[in-house]
Length: 211
Image (cartoon, rainbow, N blue to C red):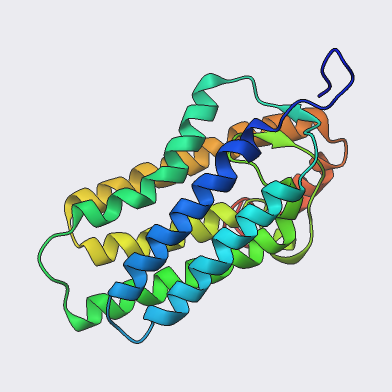
């Protein structure tokens, strides 16, 4: 988007997300390194990689071809992005060794998948629904929204770690928000990117081979 003077307008998403991602990186890294377990350091490394890629993507991205005008969709996108930070507040009694291992394994698996997804999404990254170009490499060959898949898997690990009904209720709410988010995002992509319909028709939504 250009201003009246011909200069590009500031990227509001970049101005918000770059410092926010830096703060999230520090908070998550500190929380993970304080925890125990054999998967503590792999998780910390993946968190650093994830937020570093978020910052790198926002710094490099160009203007969007189209942006969703839905306030509801944008609000849900922001809530879905922030929801995982509520899981530590919902912890119950101390988890057993098996529960801790399952939670850590899912968290690491989800983070690894998310890092892979971000690597291919690159400069197309946006919290709110925007269209830039069709991405069909890496995990995007398997599913249309791999970043959401990784976030859901990580959230499942966080819910198991919390071990409370409130934690699993938050997980279900997050799944619903990501599903709604994906649907509204695709409406923008279908309108703005001619090649997206063919990509959608041959690629699953969130789980390879499903829908």
